[in-house]
Length: 542
Ligand code: 9MR
Ligand code: ZN
Image (spheres, helix red, strand yellow):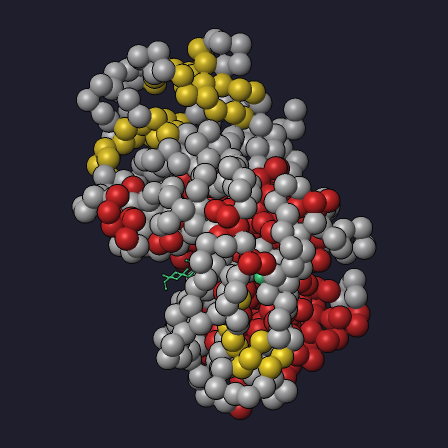
């Protein structure tokens, strides 16, 4: 018998569901025992749906009416017990570690014991870096390693920064706790201290004319070594309008948010954002593809319209320049690109979020309303998908591709914020179901986060985790998740052809196409958990 639960815990006031597979040995009743061992719920004969994404026939057990905190368990008819918990703040520790992840991704500085615990390492990648095709070099240390590799990519980093800064802007009170990082205690919330580490590196990637280089990586991915042992030199690739626009968006966003804490730094960011903005107005698209001989990730994109839209939203919020207002207005009205995408490729949703969360009502009401309709329209569409499948993901089977967990988390954010916009609980519930999936309520019973859940992720494709000589991985890292294309040799070999999309995953350190980690797979979890902290702040504390 197979029953899948959120392995971390349910909020007292939130929706509570588990997924039961219709297996040959299934028999009813399925019971829930309370902390005292008393049966408080009994399910017989629920309805089942055939589900293509998971390759199962499954049904939902809803126990939302249970609201008392404590340790419960499902009891199957063969006596198997599956524990779960209801707690006031089930994700508090996860929220901390999901943020601390960014400290562990820092490049160019020593990770000291007092902050890193057992996961220390020496400073890495501190040498000057040569520009590809040019005879000049620059000091370019800092920023976060993108992923399991040691590259630093502006577009990917900007999306992570975007998630984190919007999380802070939307729910600042969720970020009161110290992250125990070197800057802690300086009067600035640690999430902003951490993001500054990346923004400082962004600034090194900008040219005097405002344009921004796409990435700083080695020519190809290095071996599975600690970062300080990486012998490969880094290069800086040419500029791209994608990087320049994402840079403009995040520096403008940063300028506004840091102003309260550090006027001088805010000014520096504002100047950088504005010069990137001017460059964008005066230049056509320079998209990106890997130059010959460069084999690290390219974060290639077929259009920069959504990046320019996001930049325009934040630049207009920063300085009220009409040119940017017009780009936003056209973007919202013409709808030539996704206005709800929240990942590295489609960033339009970050722009839309920038309009919606603006408490100073910078944009006129028509633009706000159009943005709201677009957001709620997408949420309604995803809600239908959520309600059509027993695992309640907002995903079509074909969407389980490389980094599918980013899709799941993006949709969770979209749904949750739709709940905030509309006051309708069904959206919040749907967002919680996405989190359930990430935390183990999936057909593999896999918690996709290291250190969390009864079956936590153990072997992410992450160079330090592999080479630090420590068995357990650093906690709080989100895996890319199932990828139906099985796009690496180990996934191809170990996942049989025809496997259902949701099951195309192996917790194997070699499987970069299913089990890598990235900064922009952690950042949406931080944003989602911040939104949820805002939501459940005052409910049913025990
Ligand atoms: O996250 C990216 C995913 O959406 C793409 O399908 C994949 C292949 O192009 O690349 C992923 O990004 C990787 C990047 O190129 C390099 N660092 C590791 C990233 C995660 O696997
Ligand atoms: Zn490094």
